[in-house]
Image (cartoon, helix red, strand yellow):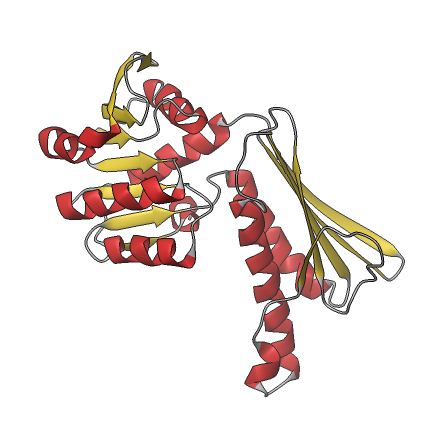
Length: 268
């Protein structure tokens, strides 16, 4: 079965990558593409005005919409998809708690799949982090992420996901040591960069965001202690990696029931 998709943010970096990747696939077809800056075609697909998104959903009836835009636009598109009964895949980062609540509300009506990163390598990195942190309990942890100079949110959505993985792994260790639930809960203190007198405190995670050039994405987790260090690093050479993963997610999500889904489910 060919899955029909709508693409938002078509004139943006990721929107163009999604359209380029879709052109090479036989299991997907592009029903329409929209942008806040319509007019030109991208990868041979005409780009419509984002203001017409709801009408395009009704007239083209895609199976899934793939979204890489901004937090406010993402929520608008998700709400429109929920009203139209269209599945929604998004890799938009920088969402607030209210933004995630709005996405989960849409998931009560249609299948919604959110991922801060659609790279298979990042999925493997997350598994490695969840294994390494308990194995190296008590080691200092630093996270560094690097992206292109136009990226708005810092730390990146992927970095925040990795930090959550670190907290979860540390909580699992504390759970084996304590029956006090208050001792188990809680995130590790996060220190964003350092300046002046800044000695480490126990359990903190240093977080560093770099913005330069056209780097697609790099994430490194450093664990150090006991006279040794371990570095876990992922580098994306092209945004096409993320586009391919998002399209895999769209093909997988098309016939699912309404609900909240994760990219790990696609990979499994």
